[in-house]
Image (cartoon, rainbow, N blue to C red; front, side):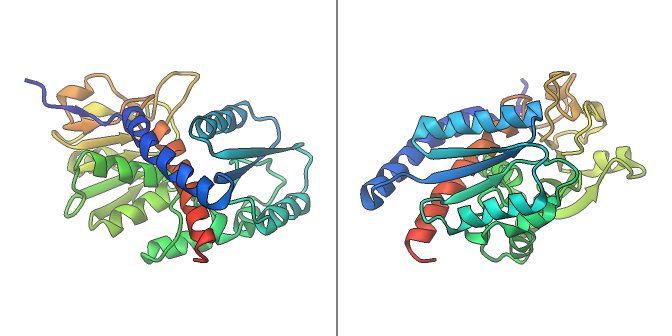
Length: 284
């Protein structure tokens, strides 16, 4: 009998709504307003617009207030920094999200780092990443933190496991490796330039695919009984970073695409926004 477990992020996010609604209702009663998220979208990238719209809808469903600031792609770094300063100073804004990527002429890292650490609900500041790496208080980047929450939901133990993270981005691969290391896994970080990747795949107990390349990994290369987290999504090709053909005969658990990691990312963003309001209102 096939014992492969589907790590259903969509179902978990839906179940978590009950807890979110209770927290939001409590905050609204105590402070006269719901948690508030400010999203900044620069340019007209279709994928970014879609992601922001999805986040807006998810927030609306649970009663989190969202305000979206749309800036023309000709917006300068200084203009963007000025807007972030305004939102940092606004006591009715609990979380700030700068949608990645921004146009190339904008200094994205500088803009990320301008976000108040207490409102960095998307986990993009370098200070936040440093704190996270040292097991200090910070909001984790939403996708890797969502993955960790999903592993916990399904009672998947990381301690002592060999975890292979394929990808090294600032908001996914690097914080993912840090979170797994903090959970006492042994970490190998790989990427598109790594040699002998197939050999590493045969060794890893947990594989997080976050290279951003469609069907970059053939699931048949994975270790028998391993756990696969596919954090990639390529809507044009309707696939992730892993060729899933035959996946259930190989791994013990995996995230589907779509419906695995994606819903957890947005759910985690909402959780972080609620936590931000709780922290700010308690003076933390």
